[in-house]
Amino acid sequence: MPGKKLLVVEDDEDFRSVITNVLSSAGYAVVAAPNGEEGLAAYAREAPDLVVLDVHLPDMTGIEICSRIRKEGPRPKTPIVLCTVRSEFGPVAEGLAAGATDYVVKPFEIQDLLARVEHALKGAGNA
Image 1 (spheres, one colour):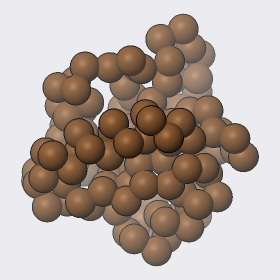
Image 2 (cartoon, rainbow, N blue to C red):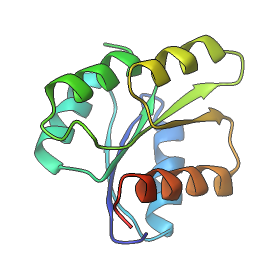
Image 3 (cartoon, rainbow, N blue to C red):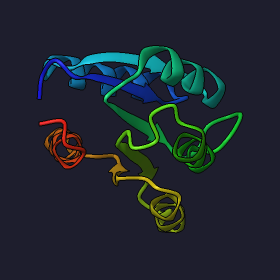
Image 4 (tube, rainbow, N blue to C red):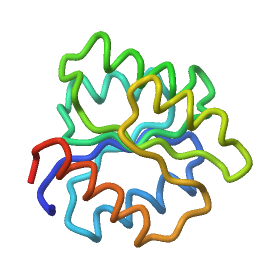
């Protein structure tokens, strides 16, 4: 669904760059933030169609951000795809319980990320 605006919240600069480039190359407009505080500000300011959210950030967890988006809005139904490392499935269950739409495990295949993003957008009625 090219043309949709996505927010990437990822503290690792290299990984944030990779995700941003992959999504931009697929035709999405991408805004990126390096931490939770800036991510929440960008979410409120940019009104993204979907958020790609790292679970582990330096100032707050992705699960906390997910919960805040769901409870405080302003668009509480925005799809959220969590990113976590392979050895941490506990946070995935916690994130899904907090309202995440889906998750992707790092390192991920580019096609897997793109498929999950597109699926989450379609599920949100954004097709």
